[in-house]
Length: 171
Image 1 (cartoon, rainbow, N blue to C red):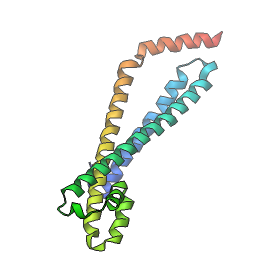
Image 2: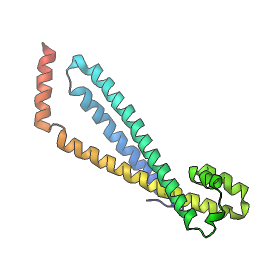
Image 3: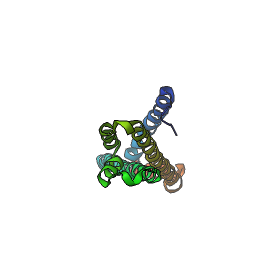
């Protein structure tokens, strides 16, 4: 939701809320996982939790990175196609512009007379890709919250499970 002229305090505040949310959710989630199995299986639960967090994080990060890249590329391709001088842009130059922000910056250095327009288009394309990635991240969080709410055992069922595990551990 930020644009390229967003104030630092707005960005910092957003990241502080993100960090606080992850910090407040992480410990109870880990405790819930390891505390909901018999003591004899706590090590397995801990390992499973670590695997889920690491593998899930890697997969989601890859998905969000792919969405960011696809959004950037599509936006830059649209910008180039809409330009009246689009036919004079070589395929190699267009590929470099669409590949990454760094590629666009390199092209801007090669063509200083067009540098402001190239950098502005690259920023806009990056923000378009960024918006797609953040929208997907929000959807993933909402789906995860719905799964936890509807699929995980409710408080009474969890207490029954914990009592059963405690009885199992005392044998």
